[in-house]
Every structure is written in structure tokens, then in C-alpha cells.
Image (cartoon, rainbow, N blue to C red; front, side, top):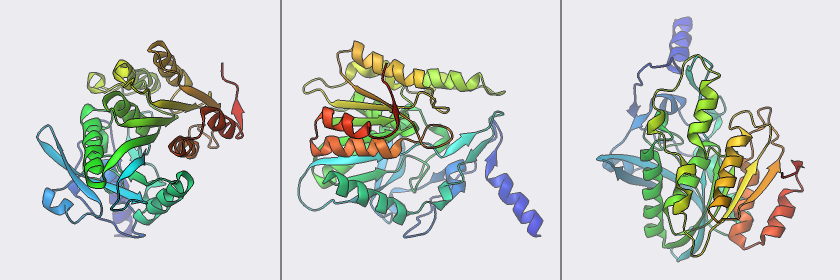
Length: 324
């Protein structure tokens, strides 16, 4: 019986290429309860009624379908908020060379309490309220993480910011996005006029280029590339009065999101008339990809009003590489 149970669990937490998902009703972990990797792999469903019971949950609808988007915040009050920090995390759903999907083993070690502590530290560093906004299908938000990169995910996050702005009377946002969360932050930068600054770390800002990069290394190719929403295509829509600050943090040896794709985005911004700060760093993990902590630090400094020169000097205290 134990062997059968272990076998069933292993099957449940892996999905072969093309295998259908089996979403379940959204769980609502609280405190130190871990997030369920099954939901990150298969997706979850919710309702507007259930979302009322989710701590800091927002029922968001787009294209005839709704999802409950969960936020983890520190520093919000009943007063007006001139500036609020918002963080979009990277993907937790990964793929093997044969496109078998599985959830990063670190995911089930995360909890609402842990995210709240992260936001408390970030808020204290910046002197501003800070929010972890959970993307669809992960960290307590309903939806399908398999459908990441598509326009619906961007619009759910866009409308969630609208809801936060209305509920907490926010004037401006400072965004930080790591990896796949960087795609969301960059896409929102293209759309909104209330974003004063964005920090993009190891960011997936040229989606098709990176998708093709990985397709060349897998035996099973992506089938839905036209449906992917690519921030690099829409930088001409970024607000210019005033221009937002943009910081891009990259590692030349990034093995997840190739450096060249991030550099292409920086050059596209420059060609459009922006002056992004591009800082090359050495990520501490074996994939040379984990720059989230530095991205949040850069966002905190922008939210405080620190100068670009001060921010560059602070970031370059870390082991880094010379900018070309």
C-alpha cells in the first residue's frame, strides 16, 4: 500500500508532454501551511464567493472567466499610498528535456507566513508598503500556471493592480519581477501609466527568443508560440511623461534565460528613447539565474528616491561583471 501511494504521488506531481491537467478546487493555506505543488502543476478553480474567504484575495475577471488572485502585503493602511512596491515571482513549473512538467522542489517549502516575512523585510528596506502578488495557479491564486506567458495572465495581473489601486488608494507602483515574473512586470510597464519604476532581474522579456532557445534543447517543441505575449514587441507603448526608471539585472552565464535575450530588450528600450540601467552581476546559484534579491533591492532604492548613481554603486558592491 505504501509503495502504491508513493507511486501515485510521483505520477500526480509529474505531467508528460501533452498530458491533460486535472485542476481541483483552490486550497486556502494560512500561516505556516505549505502551498500545494499539485495546484501549481494541475491548476485550481475558485469562485467569487470563495474568493471572499481568501485573505487579501481579489476576484478578477477577464475574457469571460474569473480567478481569485491572492496578495501578501506589509505596510498597507487606511491612508492614501503615494508609492507601493509589487513583486512578481518566477515560475515554479519546470520542464525536462522531454517536456515532462514538474514543480520546483522548493515550492512546497513556501508558506503564507514566509511570503509575509519577505514583504515585511522589503517594505522596511524601502520605507514603503510592499506586496507579493501571486500569479495565476501558484502561491494561493487560482488558475493554470501551465498557461503562463499568455495575454490572459498579463491581464489578470493588470486588473489585480487596478483592484489594489482602488482598495488602497495607490498613486504609483514600483514593480520588481524575477525571471517569468519579469515578463509580467515588463508587460505591465508597456500598458500602464501609473508605474514609476521597474526592476527586472534575469527577466523573460524576449519570450519567443527564449522559447526557441529551449526548443532547440528539448526533444519536444512548444506548440503554442503565437499565443505567447512578448514584452519586447510593445516597448513603444511605455509612458513617456514622465519616463519610468528601468533597471535590468543580468548574469552573462544565465542558464535559464539567456543573457542575449535580456540584452536585446535593453537595446530595444534604448532604440525607443529610454535609458535603462543595465547591471551585470554574478548570480549565486548553479544556474546563474537567481537575482531576485538584488532586483528587489534595486526596486526598494528606486521607491526611496535614491539616485541611479547610488543604486548602481550599491548593486556593483556585489560580485559583478563589466557592462559592455
